[in-house]
Image 1 (cartoon, one colour):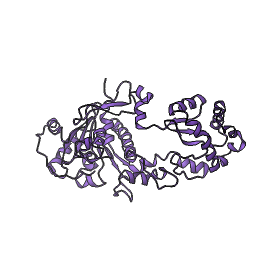
Image 2 (cartoon, rainbow, N blue to C red):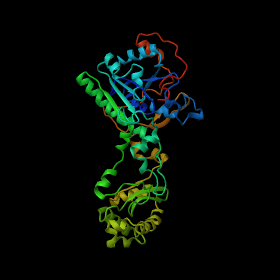
Image 3 (cartoon, rainbow, N blue to C red):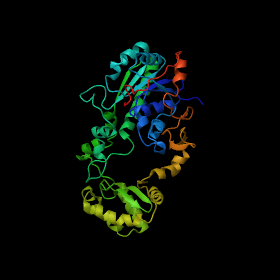
Image 4 (cartoon, helix red, strand yellow):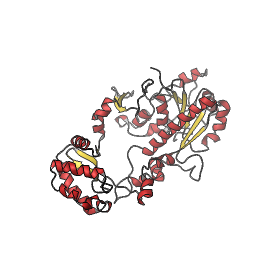
Length: 408
């Protein structure tokens, strides 16, 4: 089958803010060349590491975010290597970079310079706060991105400081927004013959993930806060069960249909103490929001839920048309029948491991042009000779010192 992006060339000169963006293009068939400084891109230094080696070839974070790419090492402080990059840019459709604003300009590689060599080229810059504004030159990691985008405020428990989510979610948001915007710009360039500069802000990408925070204030006059799994209203929150936790949404809005359906369920099951949930006060927003209501519901529902597994409660909720979902652990996801049916987890390879291992695949399926990991993440400079030969240039020894961009 034909790959969706076959024939497209992407130069990925990014770090954590852009490597996954490049992977999305590579796994759909684009020729993605990872442009690395002599010491390697920053993500090569990120844990977890294979066998706790903690070297540039053993990062699993790098291995996952850089499948289907080739690696070329260039010292962009070196005039000859800059000339090589510009020559390579004439063959490319997209460049992804995550340098601080102005860095490429100081090297003579800004958008104007790139456009002069390739009018159709799209340059995507993914930075913490964008190319302009009072924060443009500020540095920020994932935690700062979550904080400045407002999402950190919603994470954690009501009686603790904010707690970050796992897995560099601010980086992920920036990468995904960067990929979508880049693809749109590449399509536009094919239609018009002229590329453009795509300016992606991690902060703005995180703001987009605040879900219903604005609507809560608009409709209820309430500032959405962190709940940490506790009941926001009686019957809505995370509750323990026989083998873990479930999220249950029986209440939340006075008199809504889920509360009535939950009452029907409990009565059919003969849940002790549940008859009181038919009382008029349980159909008011004011009472459901009280600590008294939350305590009563907890004391009635939790002993009942303790008799059932997450799967059993999920099935009961489905049968009764009440929103309920298991709180899955990573191990649960590997066994999830829906994910197994769609073959979401795929095998990855790494030269340090004798056997392949499972990793998340793509959250979409294309019927005619499916995605695939065409090759494992590259070793540092693995394709230097190959790429230079394609350009008609002899392979040159690479400097060993860390160059500009080594911490990008």
